[in-house]
Image (cartoon, rainbow, N blue to C red; front, side):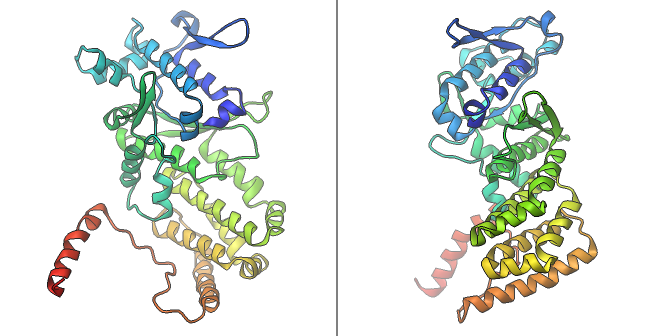
Amino acid sequence: MSNDIMWADGEGLGQMFYLLGVRPRWLPNGRVAGIEVIPLEELGRPRIDLTVRVSGITRDNFPNCVELLDEAIQTVAALDEPVEQNYVRKHTLAQLDGQNDPQAWRDATLRIFASKPGTYMAGVNLAVYASAWKEEKDLADIFIYWNGYAYGKGVFGKEAFRQLQASLKTVDVTYNKVVTDEYDLFGCCCYFGTHGGMTAAARVASGKEVRTYYGDTREPEHVEVRTLADEIRRVVRTKLLNPKWIEGQKWHGYKGAGDISKRIGRVYGWEATTQEVDDWIFDDITRTFILDEENRRFFEEHNPWALEEIARRLLEAHQRGLWNADPEVLEGLKEYYLEIEGWLEERMGDIKGDFQGGAIDILTAEEVADWGAKMREIKAKLGR
């Protein structure tokens, strides 16, 4: 992400270089002039392959960094080393499958992907928010088709769905990092859309479990790497369920209520894409915001629509089997959801049509594809 370059002096880029087994080549003036390979004897381990999803802002504002990373990947892939000591080369040769031409080699070394030029986001977050998915494979397909555009030296937005799919098959670990508490993994839906979406896509592509980790360089003298589940627990405890944080949000009335709702929606997004959110977290969110009379009254007064969204996401998590709820908590949630719907109906006044409520209607691509034929059939019957 661009904050790695703008805020963290390229810590993440440095980590990627070291996994590949290269280091920056520095000029006396402090500028980077390229990369140099760390010999295997000095590295003391195999070179690790990478599949990198860069943000649209990084792609558009820091193409020099994207190209430098691509240069490192191509250089490592071309090293004459045993494949069990160089996984970039191993996977590149596997993709080549005996082909021996420059274009095939270039395609086999594509490792940096993003959305189509001129577009942003990973797509998965939109599908999650719209409830437009039935199973993990749906989210995996969305991730690949939204982000299957390759970038690097001489390559800008090349369609590379097959290459992304092949690269994801080799993924064992997905990783992102936090550099400041000003922004955390619930601060934007792009985080679960990208990191969570890549995790789901890698699981489906490889057919195996994929571990998820989160780095923490907020304090340079105390660097940590945690599991994603631990990072979720940390942020839930320090912010989302922290009474001081909640009271601070209340000062902002309508906006504060909306921000609470958005963050809870992102908790749901992480669970939908990674299944790394503990059941107790959903239980405690329900107890804190739905079952607590004082907090419920705050939402009723300032933004009942935000509380309806919270309750609806919680019910969806349970309906999808993502949350094994405490029975008493679930019963209370269902009871108060009816009350929340009553608030909204009263505020909406006399209107025609159905009220959305908590129903989740999921349509498959096949069903959508039939719409055109069905509409033509109906129009034919009507003589239109």
